[in-house]
Image (cartoon, rainbow, N blue to C red; front, side, top):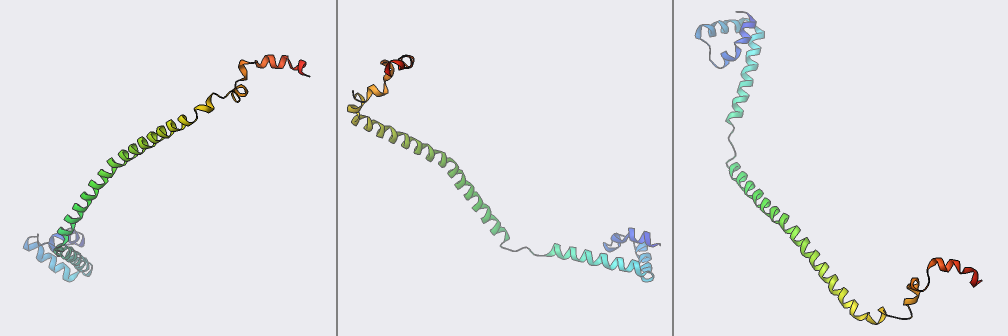
Length: 145
């Protein structure tokens, strides 16, 4: 058997999936060919490492830790959902309180300022349009000089 044929059947040799006749031929080849025997030893080491990884025992507390983490994350999600609903409600209540206090303070201010709203001393200075229009003011500037 040639090295190319040996390498193509190497995995089957390691897993003992070859007929006895082919296995014996490969054994003869491995004793004669150093390159193929190195490939075989490398593949056996790799397969041994894979088997070791498969056989590693799982931590007995792994499942309980995972379940507790899931429950904790569910609790956090419920709290987050509650906070997501509570924030807009709280903001709305604050707006209602702010508007209500503004209306309350505004209505108390108006009560005390009634005597200043109809002052005869201040109104003429701010309401001059009834007395004279701007056009007449500029037309009559010659008379004032």
